[in-house]
Length: 194
Image 1 (cartoon, one colour):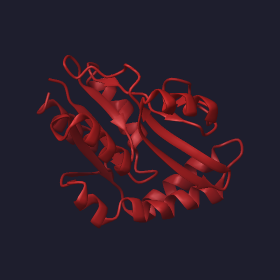
Image 2 (cartoon, rainbow, N blue to C red):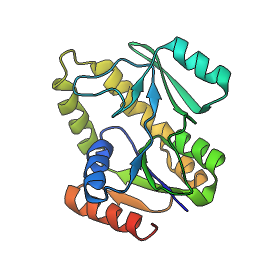
Image 3 (cartoon, rainbow, N blue to C red):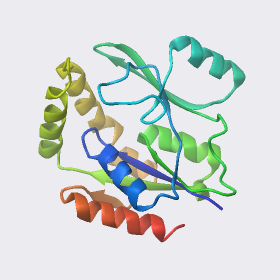
Image 4 (cartoon, rainbow, N blue to C red):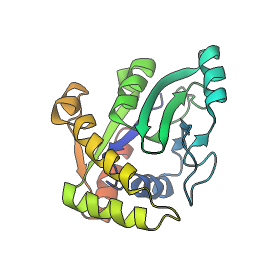
């Protein structure tokens, strides 16, 4: 039976970089590409980081009953929605998956697929280092959105509070100060459960 290895962490904790490196090292892990209504960022590609859809497509998918979970964020740039859909990507009878998501999406996926099939991989970074990483990343954008960066940073304090992590049953944590060490620890955790 397959597993869904679920990478989570606050913004700028290195989730995307860890995801890419783990995929290189364990190529048999499959993707579950999530959906969003937010605009595509510089450097992102359709069907790789997300499926970028409009509000109309989201409504059609909801009407078909294939939206597993959905989150909406009232950003400085408008309301952005992120969601996971049962769109035929997942076959737990035969495959393992690696996903990046939020604690809220992890909980919904756990409810949909079952606790036995989801493995949480929570990545931590000290807040000061995380903030400087976020600022560096935003500066590289053609049109930096600093207010949105700050909103995400502050929202993470609530979303990933100790109380919420405990409720979700997140016990094991991976500290991303030394990237290589963090990736090796996550790689070992995944391999031990495949």
